[in-house]
Length: 172
Image 1 (spheres, rainbow, N blue to C red):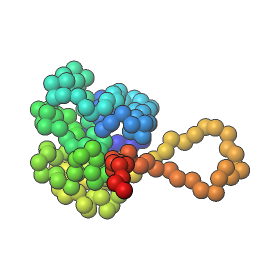
Image 2: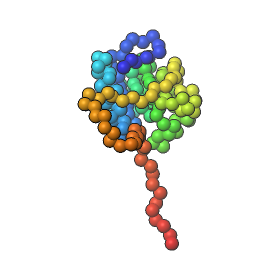
Image 3: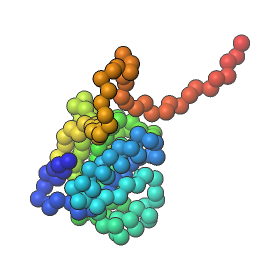
Image 4: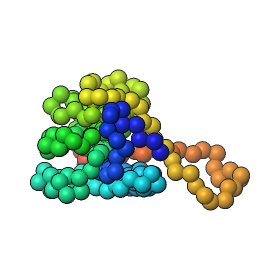
């Protein structure tokens, strides 16, 4: 894993990964990132980004990360109190958890912004101070023995977030 910071800062020593929710998809992704960072001798911490500003301030003060990677969320205003910390935002969706990422103007800008697709990068306006680019999903190679037999004729790899269901009450 190569981390391009696109500025004059040194290789990070501490990396804080903030996932938007405890869904298995994000937890698994965060653990994969943490594993890759550990292989590069970079200390990392994985948190669900649902703590209040005072708790976040305490974590940023005591853990003192060089880099914060926020997945599917905005840069929080409390992070502006720590200008020495590089903030990377990785947007997977245009909207998540009642937040519309196309409405960027009311939130602090990240130093670096990555989107998953070119279309998304074009939809989200003014996403970063220093650099914007694409960072696609990846998979961890497996070390299990390969089986050349087809298990099924179709395979889908992806994630569909839970949808709010309409009421099931029907008037007849």
